[in-house]
Amino acid sequence: MLKPFLLRIERIYIRKLEYIGDRNGRSINKEIRQVLVKYVEQFEHKYGKIEVNDKD
Image (tube, rainbow, N blue to C red; front, side, top):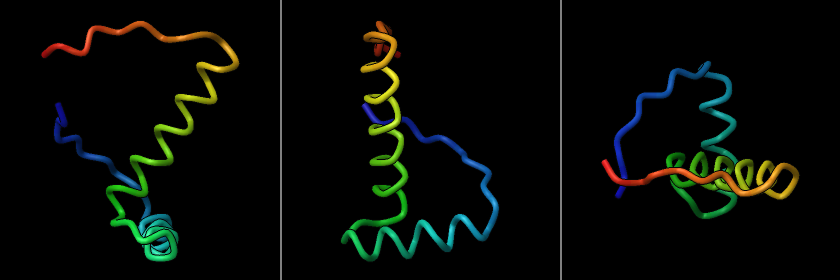
């Protein structure tokens, strides 16, 4: 389930992520999600799977 989350980020990074998202055919939200997913995957590859309860 997707849960809304407020992210405060400097305008310059918003603009850069919009540019990258446009190049990749994604919205800024989808681009940020893609970056976060890759980061978590890299972290888990290095340190092991993170077990969490995804129920609200």
